[in-house]
Image 1 (spheres, helix red, strand yellow):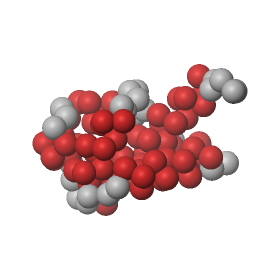
Image 2: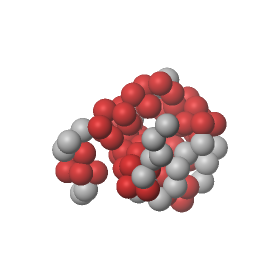
Image 3: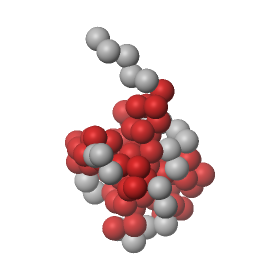
Length: 93
């Protein structure tokens, strides 16, 4: 089995953050609103969105519920962005 490089892991964290931010904004929620709905603190939401933290499986499920999507929808979007050759352009702002 191939080990993930730290660059790949960082890319996945950044991709998750981008997806989380997109879903949150699509629903017109602030980080504070999402924190309230999901049970997480606003600063943790910020860390996730910036790719500074990796979410646990439980966190993905709670975020999905708060955002009214399935966990698999979130993962699917992350996978698309992480594999995209133009991923760096989508992540940088």
